[in-house]
Image 1 (cartoon, rainbow, N blue to C red):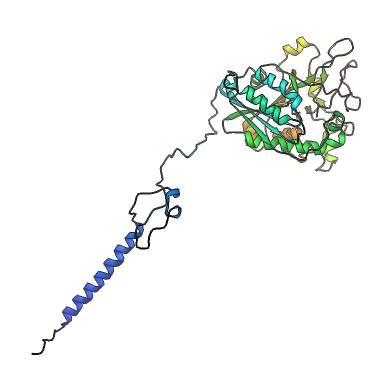
Image 2: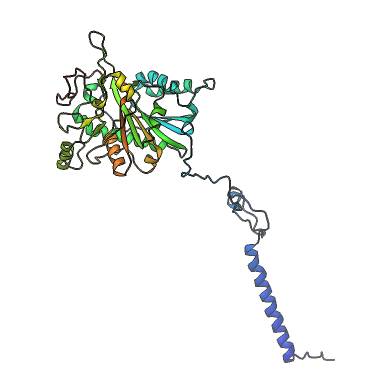
Length: 398
């Protein structure tokens, strides 16, 4: 008996074709969805497959290597620089001090810091050591350990040491360091050192920056808040030094001739200078006849005290003790290590700040005392205060 032949009608053929197409569509659809499905919980990148042993070829698990996004994650830091509603006693102050071969000055420096009246928990200290050949680093470490000991109730909020050499090979003798030929290169290096220290230490919470030289020997304990009261963008006190004559009288020498008001002679001189030349103030080679903050003070101590907070606008400043609003530095005003309007370092800083529209001021009757560097009469081509032939010695103060 022969088997019966199956008959395929057109309808049956269409049915099989439809069934085959449906199966293909369903297979492709389910395969596509597997690309977006995870068969295990989300994992951090460190736990992703590339950090694990590879799975066997038979494994069909797909692992998502990305952690889920969390809105307002605690790992995101938000900084509101518009929030300036701080009371003066709460303002954070950053004190910056560049150092080179300064070991012998650190004991006095830290004694004066410890005596500051401003709340120490609102003060951060930062130092830059550069090109030192003495034991500045070791002495600084010891002083900071002593100052920041847990048992010391007047320790500061934080301390920082930055190390960076700039190739400053200028001798540290007074004559060579303050010689005219050393001024241009030396001021460029000092400007660089200040900038490195500033950018390493400045934090968003700082409202003020106090630049303070290591060789200050005397200052009012309220110097920070006294300068803050003036609410100026940039402000400096007068800088003098103690020196006693044969009779034991303090001649109160004028130290810093980098704080000055520009003169028409100074403007004319700068207009004729090459733009890359740095005008070193206080030297007979450049006769600017500028007005110096040093000579704007009252001779009489009672009159100085009465006019202690008298302000004068300045065009150049020295670096012994500068209080700066932190926003000035954040706006890009730093210490040029090149000739800016023929000035560099702190004098260039003052020129840059004024160009940007910030105010630069000095207090002629508010005195901070610098160490006597035992120099001879200064380089100001014999020019003294325009009075009865004062016997006060001059320093170039650089």
